[in-house]
Length: 407
Image (cartoon, rainbow, N blue to C red; front, side):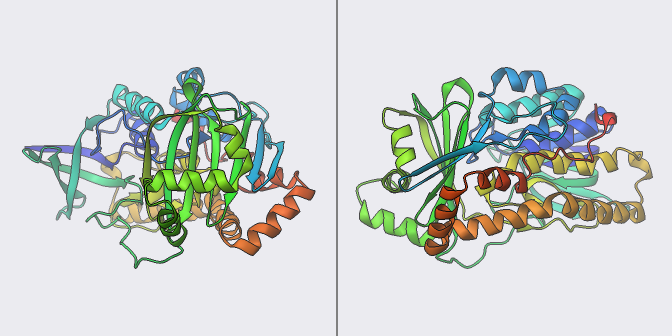
């Protein structure tokens, strides 16, 4: 069977679902292909900065988000060794939505995708795009298969928006190719905990030998703990605790080296299983052409130390789609698509490159023992520098490119 669309979105996470929602509301015919059934959990810190609440209102999901999300995060902190610090989270410059919140990905992803479906986007789930082929008159033919691999479909589209993330490889031209294994590769872990003693308004950065992480109150009284750890340190943790799973060895390592985490989890109970992913591939990959655009982690990824993954995902989709929706799909010549690709890539770098570079600096300091020790000593003397770091990470500047016509 064949299906024709103005846009094909690959991946229904925050970036993909946001893109599908915006374009469908603008009158485009949109297909969104997602290989996993929802609700689904993901390795993610789950924090959404206050800078996104204006966009969520324009998308029509802010009320549902605020009703389900955890408490406002008013303070940023640090747990490292015996050190436990807290400082004010920088407020947004417009003062309308001063504090961010966290919501489990199983809820947030379904919320945005549900709005996209309601707006008219056709959701193919659980399906997987296996191949993209250029067609003679412009556009692409995508070959997709159902989860049971018993059914195949051909989807014709003028443009492709790749929102499939970067942590998992694939055969599409937008997938990140696997790199040789290195001891410095970072692997990510995440779990929820109930009955934690973490202060409700605090989101601490966790520093421990060989890695970093974060904790935050999410929905339903749960605390999300997510972290990244070097490949070589992970291997050492497993050798030291051969009877434990990789994730349990990691959390034992963190608790042994972060007194604040150990206190916060002293009487806590894990809610659900551990999740893991990686190695992560931070960097900027936004340049694409020939009618393929990338958003979310496929476009660029900051080290999770700055907790800006979801923010960059939905903001990048808004940045792209505010350009696309200004044109009728039938008027998108190759010349115009090339021009839009250049404009989008330039604006992406202007809005997100500082976050990517700042995160790389912070992560480098966190995972080098001497640099981490020096950083902890400096922060202990001047905790207000945590506020400054959160500012550099993008926690206080609402994106300038969000327009009322997205609503």
